[in-house]
View 1 (tube, one colour):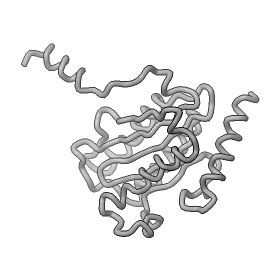
View 2 (cartoon, rainbow, N blue to C red):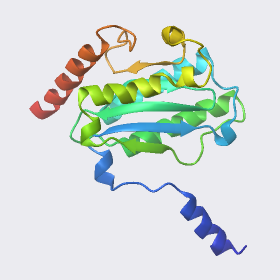
View 3 (tube, rainbow, N blue to C red):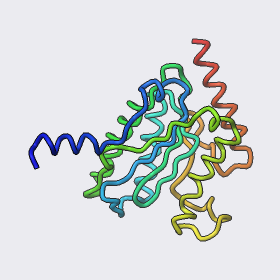
View 4 (cartoon, rainbow, N blue to C red):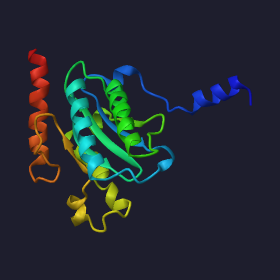
Length: 195
């Protein structure tokens, strides 16, 4: 195969992206990032806590809330919402991926696949009930993968959570989580409009 044909094939193999505006402002996006060759062995308590720190920095730097993340043995899911008019999730994802790759490589021969998968949620998926269903689907990944045997044991899964800078004790497993989350999120959105 000639060099040009190989480059064309590589170019076509990338996932198509929406217009950049779809990732900016108050966008709601479900990101999936997979470890190259689906390698396992990197996920553990140390990675988890350092990953939470990276999520906190990405959120603070780019104006993004992460009401839910779920780390799986060969990939992870992030549910991100921009809370500032100038939030931009593409550079936020690039920042997180760069930092996460450094962390992964410090643990062995691990790195993320070249491109993440994203699902930009449409308006109908952004109302509270529909959004909670997307979050529930992500939250149940460990159950579907057989990492947790019963739905009632999902809160025991050690590699998921919520990262909203300034709210370290906010937990997706609290009964009042969604009410608290939306109150915090809308306060942040309103604060953006006041500046």
